[in-house]
Length: 144
Image 1 (tube, helix red, strand yellow):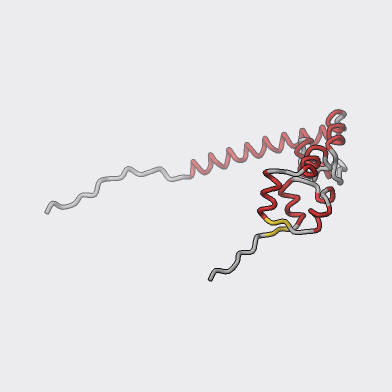
Image 2 (cartoon, rainbow, N blue to C red):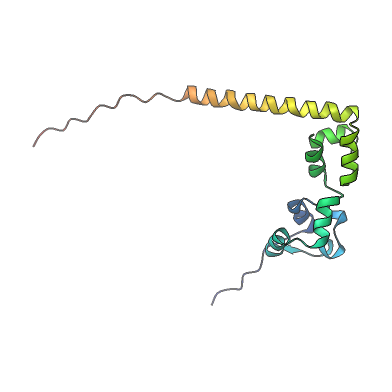
């Protein structure tokens, strides 16, 4: 007799992260229960209206705000953005870019360039350090 499998569940905060939505903006039913992996998959494939609205209008979590603004999460903090922003607020920041946003966007571009350069250096170093294949000589077997 096989035991019944219990579905894997997660906390609402984990599910909100996986859905890229701000937990405090989700409905009470979502925040008060546990979410199974099947329910999460259903939310991803066929999102209800509240999820579509949250994704379109916000408020958005920091990682989404940072992506939309083209900065890092640390750059948001340096710029004084500590709360979730709506799409309207993000668009307003992009339209009239404050000095901190311009600086952080330029900083992120430089960081990505450096990361790419370092990856290329490491790849070249790995390739140069590999031993060259020695010419294999055939094994001579005495004739019977």
